[in-house]
Amino acid sequence: MKNTLLKSIGLSLVMFMGSLPAYSADISVTEPWVREGPPAARVLGGFMTISNTSDKDDALVGVTSPDFNMVEMHQTVMQDGMGKMIPQEQIVVPAGGKVVLKPGSYHLMLMMAKRGFKAGDIVNVELTFQSGSKMPVEMPVKKGEGMMDHSHH
Image (cartoon, rainbow, N blue to C red; front, side):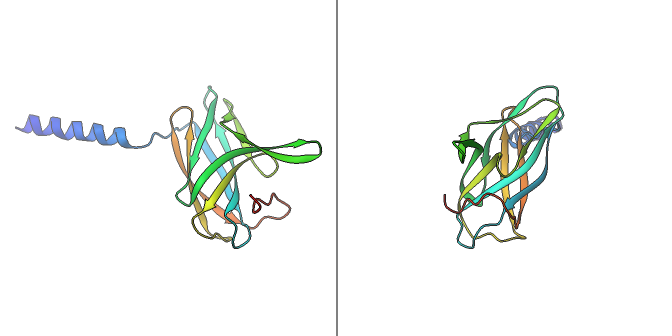
């Protein structure tokens, strides 16, 4: 009976561990933040630095948030003297390198806010990478000057 009980506990533990999100020790996030918008803003910009210490490229392929109905990855590019945001299916994080999500470059578009956010609040997101790893990130809301205003989206 002990042997059956131990096998049952072991199987349950394996099943439980399989349901946990996979985290990668090779991927790290620093300086995450969200730009504060006007009080009624339903779209905000999210920024961070993603580093990859492995010897293989990885890519950010999805972002979700319980605080927003939709999150997209964008890149701002200049075309005919105008900044244009282009949706990205993925953002490559090079082996041994990093990618910086910042105003005027790659960034997250946090859309359809479920509540208002002001400086000092926290936005929760979960990043999904091509390697299958997932990473929860807490992004503090900060005042930003001279940065992209996404309130018109």
